[in-house]
Length: 147
Image (cartoon, rainbow, N blue to C red; front, top):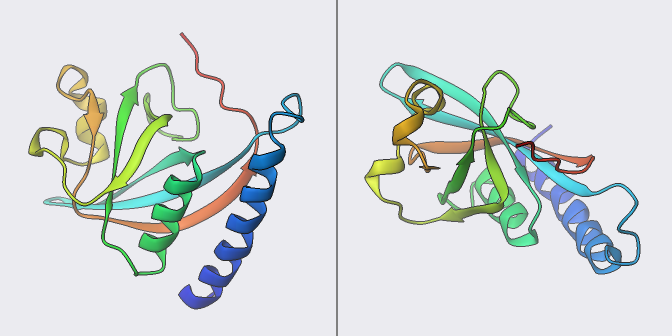
């Protein structure tokens, strides 16, 4: 599927998300709409990938803009070490309630996903600079942090 087709589908999904978000308090017991962004990180040793759950409409829009090539903003989020959540293959994930797509981040949180797993004491936040959202999918399951 082309990026422009993905963009059209994403726009429809975002509109639906806004409608569902408005109804969320009334249907709190039902499934929670979130999005799963697959993010490519280019580092010195080649590309690595990780996944981030996105809940806030601004975060979904930031991921969609990056996916469609209309933004070069990168993800910046708080690292949670209580399991992978949607970030299969890792022992950590980004807190979907403390994540954003930003223009500038401190160098201290830059890196590749394997660095976060290999050096837990150094990564409170993860903000890889050289990133590209390569996929964005809707999902209907609640965020269940452990710990």
